[in-house]
Image 1 (cartoon, rainbow, N blue to C red):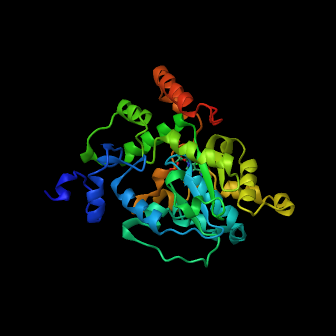
Image 2 (cartoon, rainbow, N blue to C red):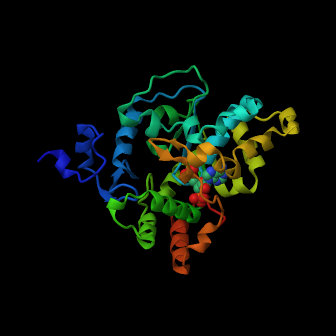
Image 3 (tube, rainbow, N blue to C red):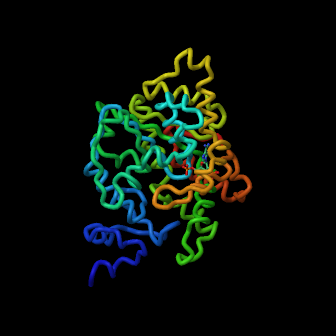
Length: 330
Ligand code: A3P
């Protein structure tokens, strides 16, 4: 029997024969936005992502000063991309109304390694002309290419995490908008149980966080670990941390001139959400940017969780994060 017949995916046309054969060997589970998620190298992924990640792992060579924005989906990736881009390129602030963030979505300014650069069988040409290179990934730390993870390498990774309660609600809303009708229903209860089993894109979430968390403790010059809630509470402090980590701290003159506040305002939810490019534009394979901006609230989960869900997820997180020193103030 042909392998294509063995795989009941809808979006397999673009996959190589090797990938299709490989998929038949992997455990799979019902997916959120695709028919299935596959367990690949210990984390859950869509079919197309697996092909791109294999290529990324095989071909990517980190260069000195590379900056990688890392996250699991729905934890603030868009925000961190905007902030990182603005901090690194803050000379562009002088452009005022011509600043790239005012006409481009952050995902177009900081491309994903697995959705843009290595997607669809691309192997991008390596160029160091625009150092530092800014790129992003959802891939867990353990599965990143050695050239990024190498302690001696100069690539730096900034990671954003978010409390698992709001993250679930954000994923749930996102999926509800984007799940193709032909895949049939996926109830809130089923989604929650699936999330608690660890079956989300690039999950389990706790393993994803812990991978980057542990590295940030062992190798603080390699990984900066940020928390969405803390950034919402005091963006100035975290912008300073980010700039210092990236080797371009704000000078006293910049602080005095209000550059930190300017970056924070430019990248704020309120500002980005209202821009035409983010209301009506598309990025990453025809994806409508408006879906990336919902409420950006901390604690919105309270409107959705029953007491038993709170109990279940709290207990799970306590177990999974025990002894790591990582916790979330919810
Ligand atoms: P909500 O769904 O809770 O509103 P990601 O960028 O990883 O997909 O994360 C999306 C979440 O970040 C959404 O959360 C979205 O509203 C929020 N978000 C988007 N832009 C933001 C910004 N500039 N500042 C803070 N949060 C932002």
